[in-house]
Image (cartoon, rainbow, N blue to C red; front, side, top):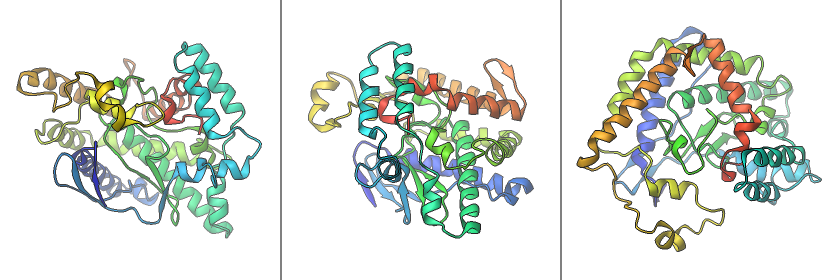
Length: 344
């Protein structure tokens, strides 16, 4: 698949390298190998800043298509009395300009009228009970691994069209990796969660939710990442200072990611962007400030791999517990950009 547009595919290629290394580390560890923990990847060949070839992830569909398609989505089929996804989106868009308390109130109201249905993905496709159990387990492990690795590399923009699910294995495949190294925190509407653990994602794990398999796999993945911090820091440092690709958040990238819901990007680019310089924005005069940003990113990565959260050093279990709480906190979810669709 060839893609031309606003995305720089070199960032995807770089993130695939990081994922490959993380998968290799998970493969080497006895506990994570036994649990078949790994990150699903796809091949990326960038040609230039604006074009390249991506491997087509055959046999997968975006979770947004399964859950929220207006005609045949699971929410429409299994909860026809609930609000539509579009109605929820409008509610959250209206609350966007109000204070945090109003946003939380709107979010809680939306959640009451839009209940999760992701459990039906495995129930519909895998009718044999043993196979259903196996696939649900594979799904839960996949969410755990991609969540922790995604957190370590600061992967953002995890909306429901950027996460695919394999229709045969029920594993997740994360695509569109343009927002990494915590750059989501400096978007116009900052990202407030470490990874996507919304109600539908949890619903797919079955009755125990985040307890049991999910939590254990998160801890095992985090253990491996923490014990391999030198290798991870080395590869990320090389990538951060690579002059060939620009991973920092520039005005165009931010605009493109959080444009208004109408997606009138091409029509409004000139007028909305005004005089913003949308070229590669850390030219030689900016190299000093760019290096500072890269240093900060490396420092934060180092802290994560040592278990430092909010100034306190946590055990693996404590760190995982904090991240799960942050990812599921309605306050955090209500503050996200409405296009992220935190209620799904």
